[in-house]
Amino acid sequence: MPGLAARLARAVRIAVLPMAAAAVASACASSQPPAPPPAAASIPRALLSEARPIGTGPRFTLPASGPVAGTCQRSLGPRVGVHVEVFAANRVLLLPAGIGARRPWAKLDGRITSAPCYGALVTLDPTGLVLVRPGAGLTLADLFRSWGEPLSRTRITSFSAPAGTQVAVFVDGRPVNAAPPSVPLTRHAEIVLEVGPHVPPHSSYAFPPGT
Image (cartoon, rainbow, N blue to C red):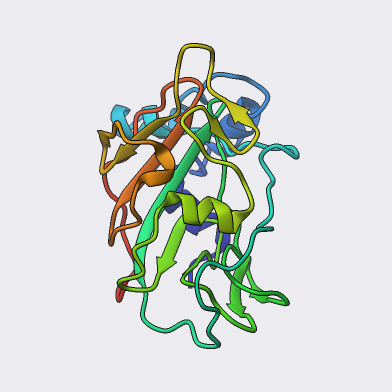
């Protein structure tokens, strides 16, 4: 199984490439995207434009603290995958591991390997992959409620949209005009939420086999 850093890089396309780590680290102290390092010269410009550093500090480090959504079952069971990315203040805001999984957890390399029971939606690692029971009919409102964080047309967690703007929502790379909480968690949807500067949204995600 890939390490946590590799899973994160694949999930949110942050620049953790050889010779690029220093550029990402320095960008974390700036409001601008990381400048392309020399080793990134062969990477497509469109991909580089999507890269953002992971946010640091208490506003970006938000543990799962909400209730389990749906019935909590001892077995994870069959799941469908949905990928959710959140960008706030030009940074990646990672969904934490443990949303929808009852404590105490056992972890290996940042991934939850066992829990007393699992709800209708869970995150086992902080890559944004949300595992949903087939037919559960859940939305982003259920995800954020289980996370324990607010979501509305003008707010994502503690980040508010600038005056006169709203939270931007994209599904499979296309803008969605619906209220963010109402967006359904459908199989293999690539959902991007943004508050603050625009970040070019990803249109797809490499979902694990079986989801």
